[in-house]
Length: 355
Ligand SMILES: *Cc1c(COP(=O)(O)O)cnc(C)c1O
View 1 (cartoon, helix red, strand yellow):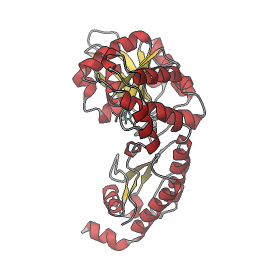
View 2 (cartoon, helix red, strand yellow):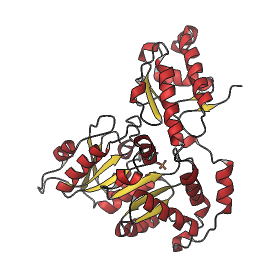
View 3 (cartoon, protein in one colour):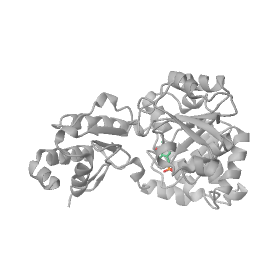
């Protein structure tokens, strides 16, 4: 059987032997009492990395995002964000369920919107209107294909938010991809944002975990909601250790994932019927269009799966998404593209799928 190549998501990574050995060596304590030295070390390290006063270790980036909204808003408030952001598409209605807020989606370009769009989305100060309270940006954009907000774009939105007294949150689940791709320190990206989510289970390769970062008062409140939402853990240093290991060993190498994604896009662009612009691949996410192959996205993804390659058929019938990561070396990228080329070249399969 062919080697299975998982390009479905960068969450597919499994902890390396080195990571597991380090996790076993970490000292632990009761994190609900803030007595886990490994969790405390990770929190301090991430706060410093992001240029904030404090950080809070959490089970997932979804929880970090939801706690951020909970702390920044009151029920009835309105949150301005990209209409395809993770909050809108992938958090099970959490903002409405947990915080009682409405989401005001603005149509970004690959997930990136402008200060002017924020200003147009701010509600009037009128008893009929929800109160605009918070702006959220996603760095890098997930549905936007891993696009990186420039510092200029981040400043533009932060300035509009400040003008209207809105808090700012950055869903920086893949912030370190943005930092590596731009060559600018994470702090430079986060400077104008009140709170930051950083996910450990994407390109960083950890099995569990995320951090929420902000000033000390914000994190004090966030810790309360961590408990409310059932996220307060005990000897969590076992997994926080993976985060420390990843920050030492898995950050600079994100550049390899980015080069692999670009290479994959170049190989795909050479397959008849596939449309993709390799220059648009800035980090580790590749979206490509298959309309002209005669297959739909779901058909191709099913055939790929049978050939031992996982990709995702979304966000629509003709698009496929592939994500590079730690567990997919360059040779597997080439192998995946070759298997896709064979499938597309095989008309008999097309007939079989259609019938
Ligand atoms: C994956 C992801 C999340 C959620 O991460 P989990 O740790 O799986 O909950 C949030 N935002 C973005 C942009 C993501 O890609």
